[in-house]
Image (spheres, rainbow over the protein chains, first blue to last red):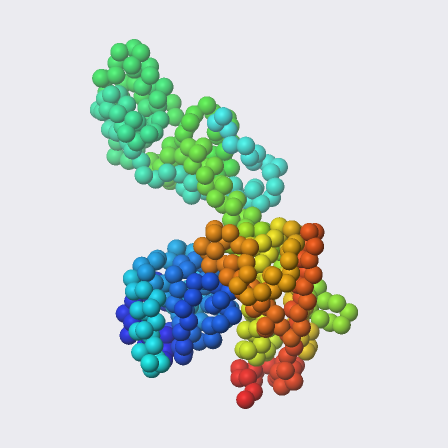
Length: 111
Length: 321
């Protein structure tokens, strides 16, 4: 599905709007960026608590169109700015990573 | 103590440009605390106390009539006229600045006069702000920071070409510079993309260069990333100036890390950096001693990709099946 449809279905708060036509086919949960880098597949939603600009760099390098910050963490201004300039959609939620992952899995038809 | 230690004639060009480009209105404080002419000196004293300021302009219909300074208040207390209206005791002999003047003017005014602040008027002679040395130094430091950042950025990378017409780009990477971390890898990614490499190859190169770049940021005293773009491959070399890896075998083990808590809180230190680099590389080499570590990762383009790469740069979006 597209980043747009996913954002709409999840109804999380949007802190940066990226390329909403980007395709999302998979998701990855991780807070250690090297782990994300090595294991997340392209076109994944990145579900993390790592509210930091470097998360955007990783997502952008491996081609994750959407980042979801869980547990009520909020993105600092420089992270939002980086997301916008890299065309990455940034969502924030009070959901846990498990909950967010379950919801996305349902939406993507993985379970 | 009042003077701003920047001279307005032979400072570095960047600074001169800055103090001529910035106008007084860019540095002044716009939220003014002012009083009318019938206010008492006592009321000014309390305004100063509550707003932590040392000078209050006296204003009628946006026109500046005078200023009551801390000195004026001390005089009033000394001489027993603190309850009298400001009109009788304010300083009238004022030096003012115009909001369109360059900041260099303000700097030389502070050098020339003993005042702690200058009122700022617009073209209509209305009071629009007040400027102190602190306003100027704060804004200048902010601007200088930005200037230096962009100067450093332009020095970050340079291109050279060797005899074989490979393009070589070198990026400086500084210790603990998380702000600019990812710059080298982003540039390498962009370059590969524009030269028509396949997404899979770009991803491998992005992973290798990002991990190597972050290793320099996190673990070293600083170093550089050298990217060599050849027709059939990209070679990424990371070189730092120490302190070296004590046990390379351990460093190559997945999950082993020497990062501290602070680094981990930023999401680094998973112990996956070097293993990730090795797994995306076609050839990988590492050497280390206390004077520095050098890691080289080479990624070859596929045959189809080479063709795409050199012959047709438009048909490059899909990896062959």
